[in-house]
Image (spheres, one colour):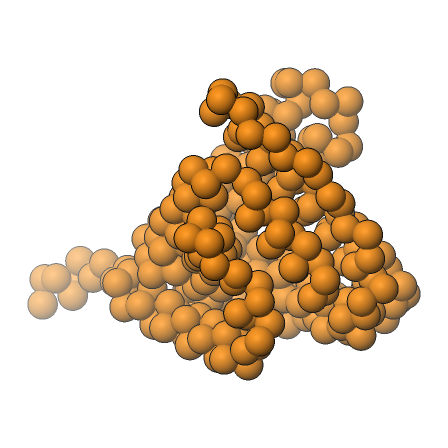
Length: 256
């Protein structure tokens, strides 16, 4: 994974500076909104995530007609808006299942042979901003697909063990979510917000000419601690600024 991160850093560092700047700025802004105020934007967050999942399902499991893509995104988004807490809890269950699988596959993922021959792309600067953005998106998409394929292969090599562990983790999260839905929703917003902020800072440091991957790899424990503190702080802030709605008093209580 070290080789992959450094190769991605080298390639992403050659992206046009404005692409790095705006990508980092947008991700940091979105991350801050989720990290510190996700509960206030829960319907929008759930709808956006579900719309993206619906679009991805339509993209990979249909013939990619426009009405399938738009219909899948709109339908999933509307359902998520109606059941926002359920959607966010299911999202956290999926994330925790993935985390468990990654932990089980960690020996494979930390093997340098797993990340050999990462995709290398030539980025040719263009006077047209649209072409620069298109090339940049292509680079990021190729790296995401390649990394996702490697992770999938590592998890698949575990066999039924990964599926059983993932199912147990998902059931535990769903069970806790039934009892403490606000707490689980706040945790989900804090985790995803922290990830967005971290990735945004990665791009911003690249824009400034730094080497963020080298810094993180040299101090992994420090940054793991920072991430944990950010998650806890984000949960507390979310619960504080978006308190639970008070139930309306009954007519008899009002009369008294």
